[in-house]
Amino acid sequence: MFMANANKKETLLATDWEIFFLAIIFSFLFWAIYPGERIIRNALEENKNLDLTEIYLKNIAKKYPSSFEINFALAEIYLKQGKYQKAEEELKPVNAINDKDLLAKKELFLARIALFSLNKTADKETLKKLELYYSSPSFTKLSEREKYLSEYILTLNNLGLYKEASRACLSIMKGAAPFEDKKLCLKLYLKSLRAGNLLKKELSSLDPFSKDFALDDEAANEIMRAYLEAQEPEKAAAYAQKILRIRKIL
Image (cartoon, rainbow, N blue to C red; front, side, top):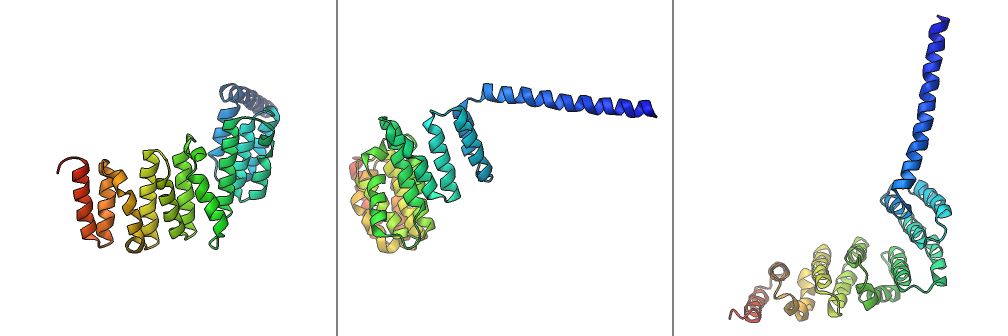
């Protein structure tokens, strides 16, 4: 009986040591395989345990103290938590460097902080500043601009600011944005009008831009469908003829 208990204790002790060594090996492999930037990306995919992720990123910052990406990662976590002032404070160290890319990224984050700080009674000045930023050349140069453009318009829609969202789309389409951005804005514009039941009232604002999409089948079909939904068959017919002329079919 005593020997059986001894064997049992030895087995449990061995198991504890195995767990200990496995933890050490796993930790080593984790740091070797996943360098700082990948660890940050993995942390940013977390949307539930934000408090733990915040603590985790702060610990990572001790290992990579010169990485501004950690500042941006923490700012992102603070945005998700609704801690807008802390998000803004986290970006202050970027002011001390002269790097165009990082400063442009900071400008994006400041715009997003202003965006997420809005409520249904958003002041016109903030909305105008956001509209100017998202239609500016500095924004159109960003690599992930389509993701943040959608975030901008859909956030306004979620606040019930459908008219403001649709007008922001028109402002971006009016600027020198790449065609793919304009096409995305067209979809977001129509989505905003439909969500706010404004299609019939506001769709005429699209008329000056319809020519820009005449050579793109998908966009042209979206516009035709919108005219018909707005009970504007004459405009739909006129636009169809315009498309045929631009494509030199007529």
